[in-house]
Image 1 (tube, rainbow, N blue to C red):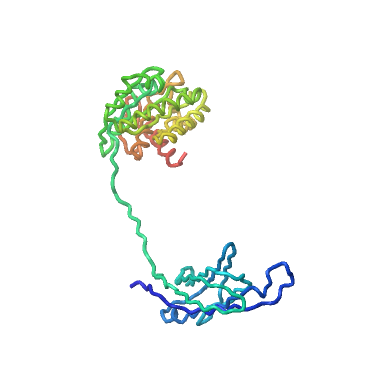
Image 2 (cartoon, rainbow, N blue to C red):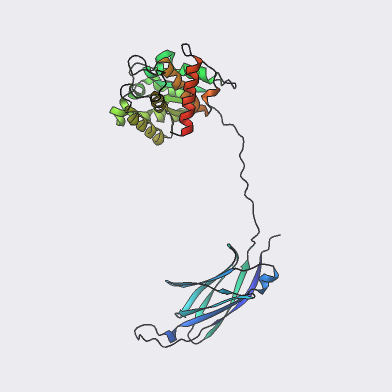
Length: 356
């Protein structure tokens, strides 16, 4: 049962005169008052409550004082000196270790040379313990099933990233059933896609769960403002359709890996601005490229992906979208042996585990 009840404690507030001030321009100390306080703790002891600290606070206008009272076996006592005359707000807090177990507040008028009798009501708090329970509900969120990829040759190379991604996703024990389509064209920018009424209609009427945007490979570096502008315009259409926006971060040219800094910065900024998913394919490309393994991610032009590059991109999409290790997937593209596939899977897992 909660222990919550009231005690009326009588505080004798004696206003005592002090010595004459030596500075005649200041308020004479004989015009000030002192409050001796004596609070009986016997009612609390009868409840087997031990008071370890008693704090008194007084405030009036811009003046305030806080004092600790002396704790004895049966009382908490002390004196507050040099109080200017007037009506003061008085508060008392009694502690048992770190817990406030009783609180009271009232007003007291300080009058030089007079004694005031004040009734202070102290409320004894319930200080029994409590339990906070945090429950993890095993509710599986709905996974996206319908994907539209919008991009250019980086997306449609090697039979299409969307097809590779679908094959990877459907090769797990859970056999994720997804549908994919793509709107692509050589060298196309997001501005080209937005300016195409057919693309806008496909976004708005396709009942997609997720729309993937891939900008022309150099645009985020050479003209980031245009990239941000048309990424935002397409995102507005995607929001209107009820789908989620996802960015396909592309990679640096093989001969200039430093490009990844500008590319990743632009894509991550777009994702943050639009609350969109960013699949960090380009960053993981760079991570694998800098390894000493001999897997080639680029085709002969040092720009477009090889079959291994498209497969790596599909593994990245699987990890990011479904929050599942690509090591759980079984699909093996034509021309890629199991050793290479296992190596690329392990690098994706390694990159995510390192939080790079």
